[in-house]
Amino acid sequence: MGADHVHANMRNWDERVPDHLVAYGAHAFADDPEALGAHVEAELLAPHLPGGSFAGVAMVHLQCHIGVDTISFARRGATAVGTDLSGAAVDAARALAERAGAPGATFVRCANEDAPDVLGREFDVVLTSVGVLTWLSYLGAWARTVARLLRPGGVFLAHDAHPVLSAMEYERDDDLLVVGQPYFATGEPVRFDDGVTYASDARLANAVTYQWTHDLGEILTAVLDAGLRIEAFAEQRTMPWRALPSMVRGDDGWRLPDGVPEIPLMFSLVARRPG
Image 1 (cartoon, rainbow, N blue to C red):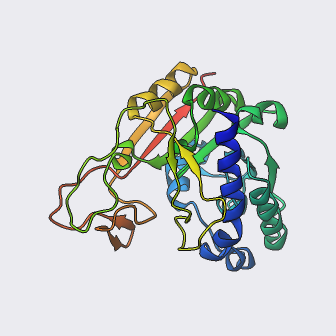
Image 2: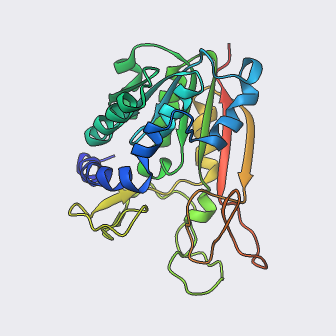
């Protein structure tokens, strides 16, 4: 990943933080000790943990953004460390954890590949979730980072947008599903200049971002090549945001409307470090 691409993305994500604090209702979340996020991730992880409980589990949440999900796992009983490249996001996450009275959630600013050396220990669980893989240029380094962070027997969960969805045309005024972007990884970044976040219509001064396409084979191969053993893989019909204009909202998230041929919208992958 080129340094210019990283810096452009970091400036963009730094600027997103105030808007996302409002859009996610982060302060109300922090003020309600019963509030929890990351429900899907918790349900996916629980069957792979002793007794299905997060109590006493040491976990690291890579690319945690403003920390809402990290704090949610701390509220479930885990000792949770969130890492992110954005200094503004880490500052906001620390403030939210203090406001929430959640000492079990701590936050460290670092890039994914630096996390094993910066944190200096191994964890029971590593989590990456929702909208993070597209910001990484090379998944081999990402998967090796996960493997280094896991203790022997530790569990990894990736939960993200399905690569098939990422290949669809987004700007349509009908219900047709049309492939408009490459599905297979090209290794080259795609430049975006839209200047808005996915959470609102707020205009950003740092409008330029760079993202990368990753196909499913690349994702699975990276995890296997890092020495992890895949225990579960699933594709989901719903997702937590309205990725396509035709989507309708249901009780369990956004989905394609009735009568439209379904495609997978999200995927989940659970893997374990042998030992």
